[in-house]
Length: 141
Picture (cartoon, rainbow, N blue to C red):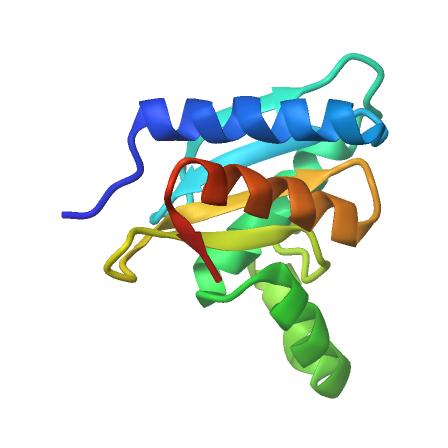
């Protein structure tokens, strides 16, 4: 079974936080989920707003639930808003189709989990996730 280890999740978290700091982004909330949507690692930086973690988790949860990045989900939501409103309601508010979360894959393309961030722009959030994933030799989608 392909799983994201606690060591990998912790590395991803630390690398993303470091990248956010070196890039001068606002304080972040970051979460790494396993393939079942369970939290493997998370952190909220000092000074982050109270919503950062919930937003990061909802982006990552939606991504792993649908098997694509939250950027892709945001694009799909534009074409089918009623379906995505229904998804958010079904997920009890844990589903957010906004840029900032990606799928984490191993070198064989197996899905290990997802990673989401909130604090900067959607592009900044996504960039720190993809940087971290690539830094430890994993892949993202």
